[in-house]
Amino acid sequence: MTPFRVGLLGHGTVGGALHELIDARADAIEATTGMRPEISGVLTRSRGEFADIVERSDLVVELIGGLEPAREYILHAMRAGRHVVTANKQVLAEHGEELYEAAREAGVQLRFEAAVGGVVPVIRVIHETLAAAHIDRVHGIVNGTTNFILTEMTRTGMGYAEALAQAQELGFAEADPSDDVSGRDAAAKMAIIARLAFNARVTIDEVAYEGIERITADDIEYAKELGLSLKLLGTAERLDGGVSVRVHPAFLYGSHPLAAVNGSFNAVTIESPAITEITLSGPGAGGSQTASAVLGDVISAMIPPTTLPAPAVETPLVPDVRSAFYLSLEVADEPGVLAQVAEILGLQGVSVKSVVQKGLGEDARLAMVVHPVLESRFMAAVHLIGQLPFLRSAPRPIRVIEETFEE
Figure (cartoon, helix red, strand yellow):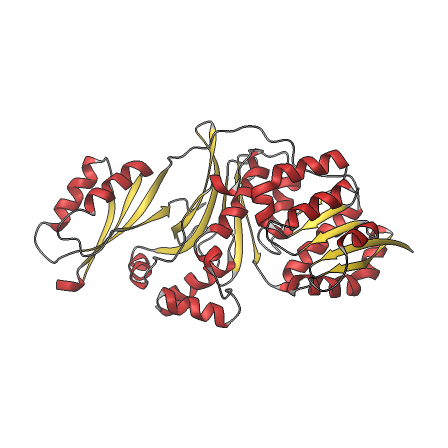
């Protein structure tokens, strides 16, 4: 037997599941690779010494999360000649270039499949399987917490706060869910995806993101009447000689491949002229699922050659993109309301595709979908509409993805 020593940093839900999985699958991995993985040391707040674990390991798995000391641990391990596997999206989204360069210089592997999409193999597919394809766009549902909340709001008609409380009770949301519901978690993942898909240097600070906190049950109900479903969607795409990376709530038509991805599942749609479009989906979270993705990276690192992202090419980020939009307006029930709204939209070059009018008196509402337009022009119109005297609350715009991929 040739042992392959794995040092484990962190022994929480995922770390514990990985430890069990390595013990359970060691025979099968040895039969495939000729080497037998074994845990050579574990680091927790009360157990183990980092330097000793690195010294006794061929590969280090980082599962402690956060920026520091995770970043320093990863750099130290690679500079000591150890391969590294991590599920840490934050450190990759903020310090990816530094880590990739350190891995190149040390001639070791840095693998991070579990950082994006849980068990969904989006990193491997973009970076390896589709390495020869010219990827134009990636759409992703990459946060299971928000997808569960929006699914429950759609399924039951409950409000955002109630759906969030249910997600927390069932373990789909943390006690402090801010990174998830604000869109920041998904933004970190989309920065990583954009780096691999387009070879563009993108950090989380360059990703525009919005969350789901302002979504109402009314938004979802009206959207149903327009044939739409709501997802927190990440988009990375080539556009006008640059790239655009963003995260925001978006309505999808029923035939879009991501429209039926519900619950805590994640999914990613990849578009390229060479392949047209493929969609990957699966559980986005969970100890055993994430541990499976981590172990897959460990096995890949056991079998050379090294695979790392190529050095980044400076690529401009495109700040203003075209999109269709849904717009929800709570208005006074009086003559001329729709005409004034339509006039403002028209002056900004915004064309209305469909309108639903609901309620009377204090319950009067307008919900509409507009044809694709530059975001800056639409938001200028929304700003003007928000100043009209008959508005009872601020306008609520939500993007609409028009692609359906129908044959």
